[in-house]
View: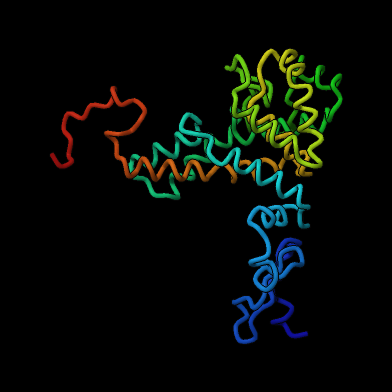
Length: 270
């Protein structure tokens, strides 16, 4: 073996493998995702949701799993302008920020412990610990303690998966739970639907969309880290769309704080 071959870098990945072109080692002749030829076999035969599942789970989803993940993706794709992550993207858009900057702005509050990906992470951990044991859930909800070895995030101020400002469950959340719980293999979602009122009474708060998403990720077999990453990704479409809308509308049509914004020396055209 030559010295050049010994020094050759190897990318270790169970997810991805590339076969180089015979005349260019820096260009791929074939790309394999978990053993499947992406451009020679999967392209045109697999949906985006199925490919997303394959990337994270290293195996193709069943039809019911793909349908469940697709339903969840639609449900959380656009949290709406009142959501902190979408508002951050809108602020960037109306201010003329680049598209990448708007999405990065959305990821900030969208990663947090209030309706963000970190709350989802903690909610999935509760599901993993309590499962469908109502006694365990009651014990957790009555005395929730976040136990982390590395203190990166501040202490969460409410029970993950429950709305600290809500008086009742919103209609869209009930609609999403009803729909997702009807899928094959959605055991956690069906359990949540059955015991929702009981859990809400114990927590003294209604569930939020994080609770439904966490149950769905559990039914799909994702761990808390995979769930957190997917939750961040799947909520970006709405943030991007709203950012572009506000960029086109301009500051004078911005839906928030309109009465409080008065330009005394507007540099724009009269």
